[in-house]
Image 1 (tube, rainbow, N blue to C red):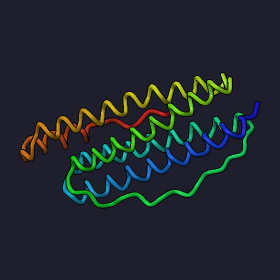
Image 2 (cartoon, one colour):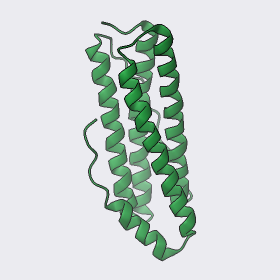
Image 3 (cartoon, rainbow, N blue to C red):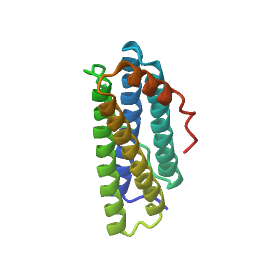
Amino acid sequence: MQLSDTMATEFNRQLTMELEASHAYLAMAGWLDRAGFPGVASWMQMQSEEERLHGLKIYQFILDRDTELAIGPLGAPSTTFNSVIDVFESALAQEKAVTASLSAMYTLATAEGDIASLPVLQWFVNEQIEEESTMMQVIDDLKFADGNPQALLLLDRELGARGAPLPA
C-alpha cells in the first residue's frame, strides 16, 4: 500500500531532516572534542548515530510502503558554538523543529486516514518527548554547573559514560 503523494513528500522530508540532525550532532561532537570535552563529544557522536538510525527507520518505512525514495540535499551544519551550553541549546532547538514536523505529519496522516503511518509516527512522537527532555536536563545541569570546572568535568564524564544507541 503506497503512501499518498502528500505523505510520501512528508516522509521523504522527514528522512532528510533526520539525516541533517545526524550531521549536526556530528559537527557538535567535533566542536566539543576540540573544546576539551571528550565525554560530551562521545555522547554527541552517539546522538548522531541515533539520528541516523531514525532516518533508516523512515527510509525502510518508505520502501515498505512501495513508495519512491527522495532524499533531499543535506544542509551544512554549524561547526562553531560559543559554549557547551550553546551546543545543547542548538540541539534542543533542532529537536523542537523535529517534534513540530512529526506532529504535523501525525495530524496529516490522521486527516488522510492513513492508519498504517500512525504507529510509526507515534513511535517518533514518543521518542521526541525523550529527546527534548534529555536536552533540557543537560541544559539545566550545565546552568547549575555555571562554569565550575569540577562540575563540568563531572558532567563530561557522566555524559561520556552513555552506552551505544539501540537499533531503532
